[in-house]
Length: 409
Image: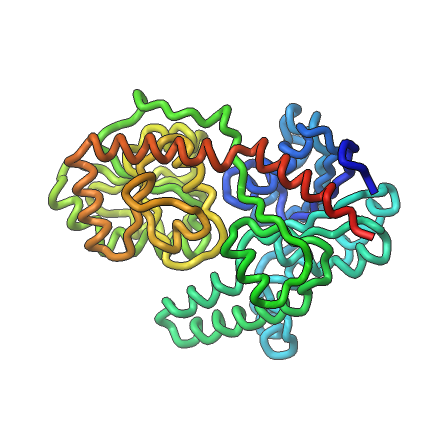
């Protein structure tokens, strides 16, 4: 295996093309790829190209192609009612996972392993663990599972908040299946790479016995300097992928329970909402006084820079919220929930505001709008916090060192 100063050949397997970097998973994968490449390692990314996140990799920018080798294979992962029902009745596997199990993709992976002698194969997310037996058969590389979140928690939390009995039943069943799938692949990898300390503890409680290294989502800090002069004060903003249930649930909760009171106290205030793939039913929810829905925007950084207070109302989900990291890096004053801040060692009212009730959100927003000094202090502390803890270069260097210190057999 490679020595401490040697170049490693690393293959990343991911269930979607990590470009464009507009959601947390894509950002987490791409930033790590580029960071490891900048350390001199040879990085290959093999991605499942899905209908939902399809991207023609011929359009990947040259500055990325010059650093990493990115390959993609199309797999039709669309949800099909017949397949979903059949899975529910005749399988114990989670349907979410089986959509990414493809013989064609397995063949592409098999060919790639025959052509290359990788040192590390990093699985981006739980579902890529399905391919571990194939990797073992065709490669001597160490296998690292990068755990982006604790996915069964997402669905259990979703079930707890669901009003429909039928949906609640299905979500609970899905959560149990995902947990069982995770239990089944536990320790079949060589190394575990959780994104947060909390996630590491969850895996260890379930029985992980492999060496692990907590590697949070790194951020390209050179491109993330706060620009206070661009802030529109007062203003409220919310940004996120709007086909993801936790985001849908959170923004509707905010509109129903928080926004009416804020609007009453600050009648000239506008809430700007940005995000792609909002279904029609959700777009109708945005048709309220003082709410401006922008849809998918070309420049998320500009949107965040201009927003004074960024609201992230999350009551389900798991892992690390990359948009919070991004917003804090840009000096945003952010109000989120305990679940939203989960996995990020923030301090309430120092570098972020954490509230779990409508009254708490309303009071904090009102206070920040009336106290520019407090607003300014939290934003400055947020930027300092991220620059001290989430520098992508340092995070990638620590992971590289971990791989070299754990060469395997």
